[in-house]
Length: 146
Image (cartoon, rainbow, N blue to C red; front, side, top):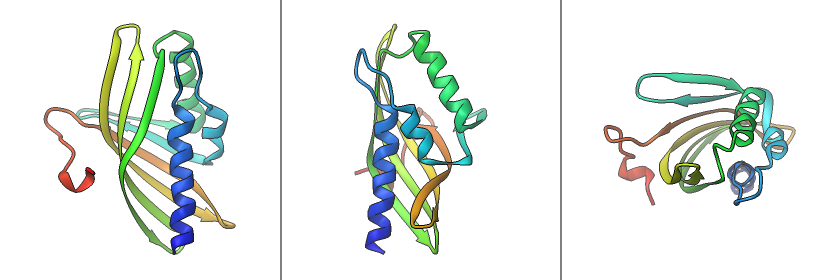
C-alpha cells in the first residue's frame, strides 16, 4: 500500500512540475502528456460552465496561450492531498496554489484538482482531472487545507 501511494505521489509531483515554469522558460508538456492515458480528459469547471479537453487539446491550448504571451511565468503547487485507493484505481483530491504572471501583472489562485488514476502494469496513469478554482462563493473547505 505504501509503495502504491509513493508511486502516485511521484505522478502528482510530476504533474505539477510539468506545467510550472520560470520567466523565460516553458513548461515540459511532453512530460505532462506521458503521465496520462491516451484517452484521458481534463475538465475545467466554473460556477456556470465546464470545458472538456483531451490531453492534446489541453497542451495545444496551453501552447497557444504561451505563444501569445498570455503567461510569462506559471507555478502550481500541491498544498494538501487526500488519496483513496481500491485495487488498481485511485482518486486524489489535490488542493493547489497557483502563482502566475501575465501581461496584466501577477496573480494568485487556489483550488482543487479531482484526479483519477489507474494502475497498469505497475505504473499509475492519469485518467481524468476535473478542477475548480476557489471563488468568492466557493471557498475550499478546511478539511482540504493544510
